[in-house]
Length: 196
Image 1 (cartoon, rainbow, N blue to C red):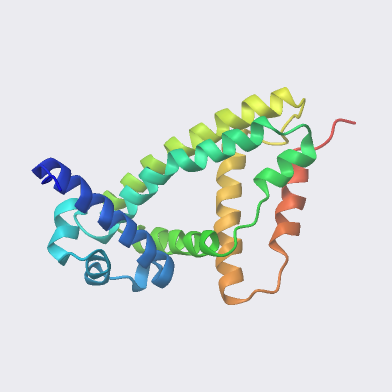
Image 2: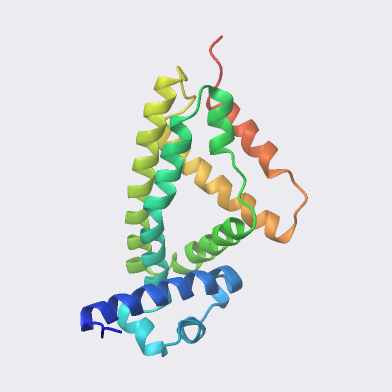
Protein backbone atom coordinates (compact mmCIF):
# COMPACT_ATOMS: atom_id res chain seq x y z
CA UNK A 1 0.00 0.00 0.00
CA UNK A 2 1.40 3.37 -1.01
CA UNK A 3 2.06 5.84 1.74
CA UNK A 4 -0.10 8.99 1.65
CA UNK A 5 1.51 12.36 1.21
CA UNK A 6 1.12 14.84 4.04
CA UNK A 7 -1.50 16.75 2.04
CA UNK A 8 -3.44 13.53 1.35
CA UNK A 9 -3.27 12.61 5.05
CA UNK A 10 -4.58 16.06 5.99
CA UNK A 11 -7.42 15.71 3.47
CA UNK A 12 -8.31 12.26 4.83
CA UNK A 13 -8.33 13.57 8.39
CA UNK A 14 -10.51 16.51 7.32
CA UNK A 15 -13.04 14.22 5.61
CA UNK A 16 -13.03 11.71 8.50
CA UNK A 17 -13.77 14.53 10.93
CA UNK A 18 -16.56 15.93 8.72
CA UNK A 19 -18.23 12.50 8.55
CA UNK A 20 -17.93 12.05 12.31
CA UNK A 21 -19.25 15.57 12.90
CA UNK A 22 -22.35 14.88 10.79
CA UNK A 23 -23.01 11.65 12.69
CA UNK A 24 -22.55 13.19 16.12
CA UNK A 25 -24.65 16.28 15.30
CA UNK A 26 -27.43 14.00 14.04
CA UNK A 27 -27.18 11.70 17.05
CA UNK A 28 -26.81 14.32 19.78
CA UNK A 29 -27.77 17.67 18.29
CA UNK A 30 -25.44 20.63 18.10
CA UNK A 31 -25.61 21.72 21.73
CA UNK A 32 -25.02 18.29 23.28
CA UNK A 33 -22.30 17.30 20.82
CA UNK A 34 -18.75 17.77 22.05
CA UNK A 35 -15.48 18.20 20.22
CA UNK A 36 -14.15 15.23 22.18
CA UNK A 37 -17.00 12.99 21.02
CA UNK A 38 -16.58 14.04 17.38
CA UNK A 39 -12.83 13.43 17.52
CA UNK A 40 -13.29 10.03 19.18
CA UNK A 41 -15.87 8.96 16.58
CA UNK A 42 -13.38 9.83 13.85
CA UNK A 43 -10.47 8.15 15.64
CA UNK A 44 -8.54 11.35 16.34
CA UNK A 45 -7.82 13.66 19.25
CA UNK A 46 -9.78 16.85 19.90
CA UNK A 47 -6.72 18.77 18.74
CA UNK A 48 -7.41 17.56 15.20
CA UNK A 49 -10.90 19.11 15.32
CA UNK A 50 -9.47 22.42 16.50
CA UNK A 51 -6.67 22.32 13.92
CA UNK A 52 -9.01 21.65 11.00
CA UNK A 53 -12.10 23.60 12.05
CA UNK A 54 -11.27 25.83 15.01
CA UNK A 55 -13.98 24.12 17.08
CA UNK A 56 -17.52 22.85 16.89
CA UNK A 57 -18.93 25.97 15.21
CA UNK A 58 -16.29 25.88 12.48
CA UNK A 59 -17.03 22.22 11.88
CA UNK A 60 -20.74 23.01 11.53
CA UNK A 61 -19.97 25.72 8.96
CA UNK A 62 -17.72 23.35 7.00
CA UNK A 63 -20.42 20.66 6.91
CA UNK A 64 -23.10 23.10 5.80
CA UNK A 65 -20.85 24.52 3.09
CA UNK A 66 -19.87 21.04 1.89
CA UNK A 67 -23.52 19.92 1.72
CA UNK A 68 -24.98 23.07 0.11
CA UNK A 69 -24.20 22.02 -3.47
CA UNK A 70 -25.81 18.62 -2.95
CA UNK A 71 -28.98 20.24 -1.62
CA UNK A 72 -29.12 22.74 -4.47
CA UNK A 73 -28.54 20.05 -7.09
CA UNK A 74 -31.40 17.99 -5.67
CA UNK A 75 -33.68 21.02 -5.71
CA UNK A 76 -32.56 21.96 -9.23
CA UNK A 77 -33.32 18.44 -10.52
CA UNK A 78 -36.72 18.27 -8.81
CA UNK A 79 -37.82 21.72 -9.98
CA UNK A 80 -36.78 20.95 -13.55
CA UNK A 81 -39.29 18.10 -13.52
CA UNK A 82 -42.16 20.20 -12.12
CA UNK A 83 -45.07 20.59 -14.51
CA UNK A 84 -47.35 22.85 -12.46
CA UNK A 85 -48.08 24.50 -9.14
CA UNK A 86 -48.92 21.24 -7.39
CA UNK A 87 -45.49 19.85 -8.25
CA UNK A 88 -43.80 23.05 -7.04
CA UNK A 89 -45.77 22.93 -3.78
CA UNK A 90 -44.91 19.26 -3.29
CA UNK A 91 -41.19 19.89 -3.88
CA UNK A 92 -40.94 22.94 -1.63
CA UNK A 93 -43.33 21.51 0.96
CA UNK A 94 -41.44 18.30 1.54
CA UNK A 95 -41.49 17.78 5.28
CA UNK A 96 -38.24 16.65 6.72
CA UNK A 97 -38.29 13.51 8.80
CA UNK A 98 -35.69 11.13 10.14
CA UNK A 99 -32.16 12.43 9.74
CA UNK A 100 -33.28 15.53 7.85
CA UNK A 101 -35.55 16.54 10.74
CA UNK A 102 -32.74 15.94 13.23
CA UNK A 103 -30.43 18.07 11.10
CA UNK A 104 -32.99 20.88 10.93
CA UNK A 105 -33.38 20.76 14.71
CA UNK A 106 -29.59 20.91 15.11
CA UNK A 107 -29.56 23.90 12.73
CA UNK A 108 -32.01 25.69 15.01
CA UNK A 109 -29.70 24.97 17.95
CA UNK A 110 -26.79 26.45 16.01
CA UNK A 111 -28.72 29.63 15.29
CA UNK A 112 -29.69 30.02 18.94
CA UNK A 113 -26.20 29.18 20.21
CA UNK A 114 -24.36 31.53 17.87
CA UNK A 115 -26.74 34.49 17.85
CA UNK A 116 -24.61 36.22 20.48
CA UNK A 117 -21.31 35.37 18.77
CA UNK A 118 -20.97 38.08 16.09
CA UNK A 119 -18.09 36.49 14.20
CA UNK A 120 -19.76 33.07 13.87
CA UNK A 121 -23.19 34.62 13.25
CA UNK A 122 -21.71 36.67 10.40
CA UNK A 123 -20.18 33.56 8.81
CA UNK A 124 -23.51 31.73 9.06
CA UNK A 125 -25.29 34.74 7.58
CA UNK A 126 -22.94 34.77 4.57
CA UNK A 127 -23.50 31.06 3.91
CA UNK A 128 -27.25 31.43 4.33
CA UNK A 129 -27.45 34.46 2.05
CA UNK A 130 -25.48 32.66 -0.68
CA UNK A 131 -27.75 29.63 -0.43
CA UNK A 132 -30.92 31.76 -0.35
CA UNK A 133 -29.81 33.68 -3.44
CA UNK A 134 -29.33 30.42 -5.34
CA UNK A 135 -32.74 29.11 -4.23
CA UNK A 136 -34.36 32.41 -5.27
CA UNK A 137 -32.75 32.13 -8.72
CA UNK A 138 -34.10 28.60 -9.10
CA UNK A 139 -37.58 29.67 -8.02
CA UNK A 140 -37.56 32.67 -10.38
CA UNK A 141 -36.66 30.41 -13.27
CA UNK A 142 -39.20 27.71 -12.55
CA UNK A 143 -42.06 29.88 -11.32
CA UNK A 144 -41.71 31.85 -14.55
CA UNK A 145 -41.54 28.67 -16.63
CA UNK A 146 -44.69 27.38 -14.91
CA UNK A 147 -46.53 30.70 -15.27
CA UNK A 148 -46.78 31.22 -11.51
CA UNK A 149 -46.83 34.71 -10.01
CA UNK A 150 -45.57 34.64 -6.40
CA UNK A 151 -47.70 36.53 -3.87
CA UNK A 152 -44.58 38.01 -2.28
CA UNK A 153 -40.98 38.72 -3.31
CA UNK A 154 -39.15 35.41 -3.67
CA UNK A 155 -36.30 36.53 -1.41
CA UNK A 156 -38.77 37.07 1.42
CA UNK A 157 -40.51 33.80 0.61
CA UNK A 158 -37.29 31.81 0.86
CA UNK A 159 -36.54 33.36 4.27
CA UNK A 160 -40.11 32.67 5.41
CA UNK A 161 -39.99 29.04 4.28
CA UNK A 162 -36.65 28.48 5.98
CA UNK A 163 -37.92 29.95 9.24
CA UNK A 164 -41.17 28.01 9.01
CA UNK A 165 -39.31 24.77 8.27
CA UNK A 166 -37.04 25.21 11.29
CA UNK A 167 -39.97 26.16 13.51
CA UNK A 168 -42.03 23.16 12.42
CA UNK A 169 -39.09 20.78 12.89
CA UNK A 170 -38.49 22.10 16.40
CA UNK A 171 -42.15 21.83 17.28
CA UNK A 172 -42.36 18.29 15.93
CA UNK A 173 -39.30 17.29 17.94
CA UNK A 174 -41.05 18.19 21.21
CA UNK A 175 -44.78 18.05 20.45
CA UNK A 176 -45.49 15.97 17.33
CA UNK A 177 -49.18 16.76 16.96
CA UNK A 178 -49.52 19.25 14.11
CA UNK A 179 -49.50 18.20 10.47
CA UNK A 180 -46.43 20.03 9.13
CA UNK A 181 -47.01 18.84 5.56
CA UNK A 182 -50.51 20.35 5.53
CA UNK A 183 -49.23 23.59 7.07
CA UNK A 184 -46.45 23.93 4.50
CA UNK A 185 -48.77 23.05 1.61
CA UNK A 186 -51.28 25.70 2.72
CA UNK A 187 -48.57 28.35 3.04
CA UNK A 188 -47.10 27.46 -0.34
CA UNK A 189 -50.46 27.48 -2.10
CA UNK A 190 -51.05 30.95 -0.65
CA UNK A 191 -47.56 32.03 -1.72
CA UNK A 192 -48.08 30.72 -5.27
CA UNK A 193 -51.76 31.43 -6.02
CA UNK A 194 -53.36 30.12 -9.17
CA UNK A 195 -54.21 32.77 -11.74
CA UNK A 196 -57.93 33.74 -11.66
